[in-house]
Amino acid sequence: MLLGNLLLCPPLTEKVLIRTRLIESDKSRLVVEGVMLDRAGRRIKSVVWMDFTYISQLKRAPDQAPGNLDAALPPGGTAWGV
Image 1: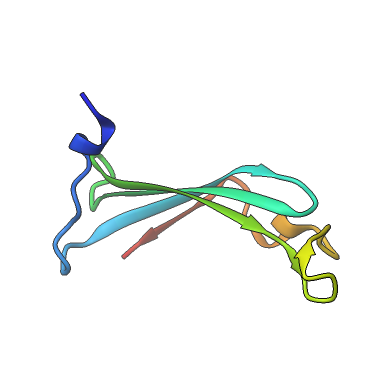
Image 2 (image 1 turned 180 degrees about the horizontal axis):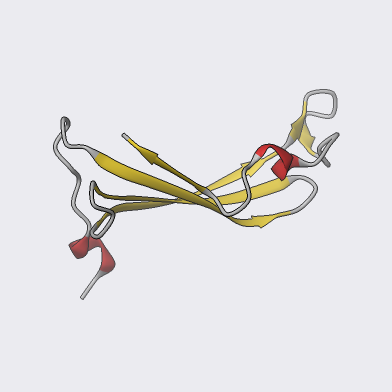
């Protein structure tokens, strides 16, 4: 069975829980996973992986960030009720 067959988009007004976690990080890149669950947090509705790369405006190319990219993220990920 394909994973895509198991995931359902919720209706626009449905309350959901969104959890994120940091998968990987280095000096110029963050990879974050986001999971949308039903309100009870039991059934997966959607999954997304986001890859953020620091781009230097001076070099106009990927570069090392001037600080710690993941310093602003809370340890252990986040969870929001939407």
